[in-house]
Length: 310
Image 1 (cartoon, rainbow, N blue to C red):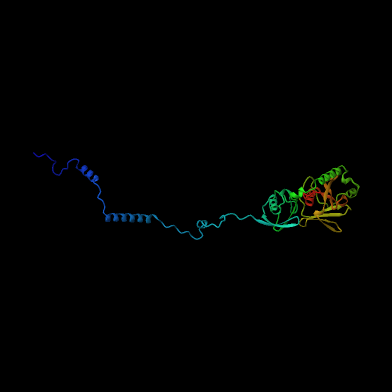
Image 2 (cartoon, rainbow, N blue to C red):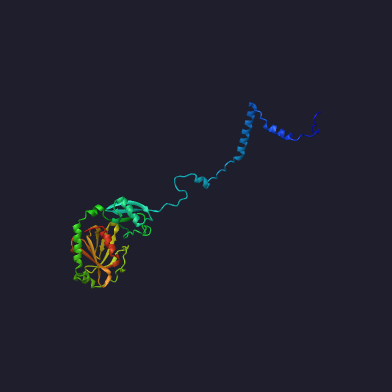
């Protein structure tokens, strides 16, 4: 007796699932050589097409474009500020001239370092002059230095200082101490006859308790020992002191002046009497009366130098 089956047109439960399982588990048929080559070519063509679609041509840089120019370097900072303004100087030291170019905004201290590099003269032993002493904390621009200016330098090297005769220094100090015991110079008869004439009407104004650089004009309106008018002109470019009177002008090399002494005038302490020693003894003193006190130290420094010994 035949078993009862499913009605016509009806599928037995589980037939679809079984067919799908069989189809999934059925091993793939290996490709022959021609089929493999065709599949590989199609994949390569598809990749090439995708690549062409993703690549876009780079836009051309217009002429003069800053980005394009920034890629080219000539070793300089593109867009950097202008260089520092320079000034050419003539450095005169020990009768020798040196050419020096420095920034106009260099300070006096920086200028001394430059001078040290070309002369070997230590900055601490330099006295740098341009219309008077050059301040270390001011720039060349501030003191109105111009290109081609002559800068006078006075000073001694360390070897020169070490060669100084120490006993001579001690004798000099003893002589000064002895001099201090004497009566004030302004009370001595030889000076009273000049001082008793009174302060000259055209003497330059004084500033008590101040120290100033030498003026750019001659110091005038003063008396000499004979009571005649005298003026002092400091020719720094020539390293000379000019002592002018109505009759003549004496041009003295500053190196020939052995010493400079001064003393306030009693009753007029804002003025000094001053002497320049032109020879080996006090008999060679050239006296000048009514020197404004604010210029006394500048005169001594300019004539003698901070590192000159006697």
